[in-house]
Length: 291
Image (tube, rainbow, N blue to C red):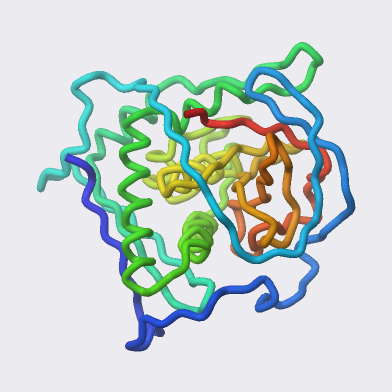
């Protein structure tokens, strides 16, 4: 049985389900992001190739799906949410793009968290050219139990979006806002480790994480929503790439005739395509979860 999950609106929603399309033009200008000129980057699953990062004037997207399955957990692992002391509930609240207040609760067995928290961490490597290689980190969201967990969250976001008349783009952007509302805590502050990537179940349970943790969570949710996504490794930082079309405004990375727009998972000040000024987005490595 999958974990019990509920998603609902709080105050400020009114009685109408009509929605106004969200536009980048609705956001106030600030100094938290910057848009720059064409620059080179690279993509990898095992190999690398040169791609282009550009700015574009857009505001909608068309997304496709990817699926994959890697099962790390034992065969008898389950999410059965029984009424016992072993069950836990995690609640996340966030302010929606149109000012609505949301909350999302996930209830699941503590044993799920305990199992994954006791697993050894998947270590990053070094490529032949001496650059960091984080390709093995896709296993953090390709694990089947975490995929099942993420699908419950994704389905709840989709249902809520349908109930309130959201466009597909708005559903995706609300998923981004959900993850952005999780508290940012460095690995050093959390557990004293220099690098301690977490499975999505751990991040939701802890209700905190650093850039790679929330990026794993966001990419995993979006993939279960039917999006074509990738991880973006930039010097000293992790983010998410979301495939979209020419109607989105902002920074993107192009690969195989697709544009993967930069999505910052750590802070709700950033919209799709906006990058923090302290992040060098001109060089990035793309990691794809696979089919």
